[in-house]
Image (cartoon, rainbow, N blue to C red; front, top):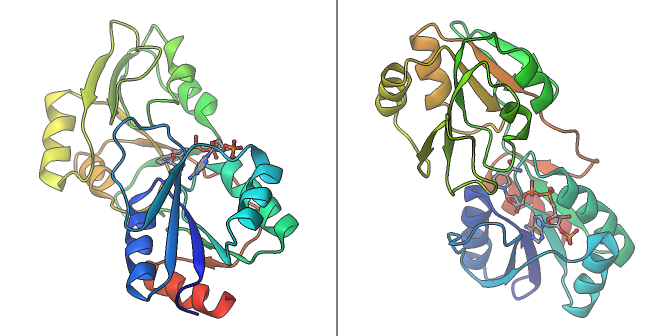
Length: 243
Ligand code: NAP
């Protein structure tokens, strides 16, 4: 019903698109951000920032704020908040739906090594390789001890703690074009790309494939069951049906 309060757990471009779509249908959208980015792109509707204090904290919030529906539109690798969301919504007896972009699947020219986590990704890199690391600024630790490889890391914000002095740091916010990605891989003389299987735009992967470069692809964490939509349009329909 229009006017009902919907909590969108965000921090992604899809969450911003979802907030806009739900607000456009007359719902009262409250967006929740973790507070990990210093200058986040703000979505439409009300915005609250910071953790809830686990599943119990979220359940209290849902009751106190009379939330009618939780839309989990967090990143596919944000496993803890999605787990808390399923638990917290169950405790508060509020329906929950999830927006999850489909994982990338390898195509004809892709040369991927599928690994379960970042430690495994760091372990499969050959000594002496020049690596393009695009896993996010909080997930560099597994690579810090690899003094035998050259790392070019791309982040939106400066990592804390800072990366080793020998690393090349590129600060940039997506999206990136295929031509720019290809030029970067060539300019930096990259041998191998490391990526989380985030899904969405695949210019980076297409550029690697076009240059015959291998990609070490980190598998997604498993999230607990929730009704899932793959697009904002599907999610709006799912949300309406859940209310
Ligand atoms: P996480 O490990 O799943 O969550 C860690 C804790 O941060 C949660 O337990 C929760 O604290 C708090 N939290 C996370 N997302 C929140 C949200 N939207 N609203 C309120 N609290 C939130 O999450 P993460 O991987 O650190 O990601 C943090 C944020 O960055 C998420 O919003 C995610 O969508 C976004 N993001 C993540 C990635 C990635 O690769 N992980 C990439 C792009 C964007 P409490 O337990 O105290 O509630």
